[in-house]
Length: 390
Image 1 (cartoon, rainbow, N blue to C red):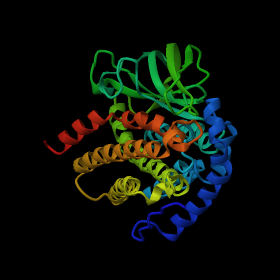
Image 2: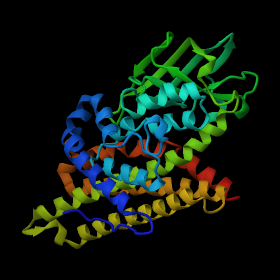
Image 3: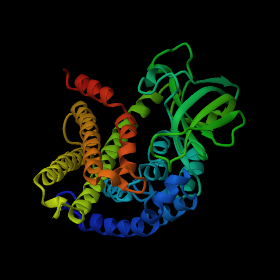
């Protein structure tokens, strides 16, 4: 039996709930039965993108002209909650990698670039990835080193990107580059769309602690010639686009984090009700009951804050700087909740919690990437402090 949190009528309409029900059925039939095998294999079938597109998952929040479905923040929350029910972060990360790769193109790309890239990705025919992090650093975006030097009607791109989700098989790469080498700060950063078959691009698959089902790569650009038309927005104006992208990414990661925590709670609760020690179910022992309540308490707090902040984002409520600060704090709260619940669930499951095949074991291995990706915990605290004037 699963513990379900109530739907708040001020946030979720009948349309949200209907979408959740259909997506829950899709995840239960198409994803959950397969994630263990996909995780062990280190990838999932490419055909899953098209199947996800058919149920409206990939197109959420994108213009209809490109095959998308405009929606509010709560449809996105529902989607992240439901995908997370499968308990496989790698699957979620790669299947939805376009969610951080496409927004800069939608917001700032030229008409030809939008038409060439967005419909194919939203239909599940092509895969998109975002490339920001470099071997020399991740969160310090303003000091990235990959260069794009103008050469006639092309840019010559040289450098490296690492920890790129969907990096091995992405067809389209949204890449942060330095187009003004003399400017060592944020003012010299641009975004380029680089196609996966560009000569000079090589990819190396990375092995990870968790997120096995997600292909993760280090990319090397060696004099890659990229058409000037692939510039996303204005030259040397990419930093703001990258920063605005982070807000939605962090909200999405927070939702995924408390949702994975909920998976751990459900698995631990089921186990505690079935497992008997010394003639008594684990769930009848006070120490176990308290652990379960502590898990539920943290999940509820994280989920409640996420819904409130989504409402603020959707309705443009409050000071923008304070909203950024609260999103940073939410990301930390939710990932700490995931860490706590994964640890407690493994403890309750005992030896079984250490075995591959339990969701809690997999989520336990995936905690750290959630606490680091999208902005490490320490970066989130420092950014929140600056936004709050502390």
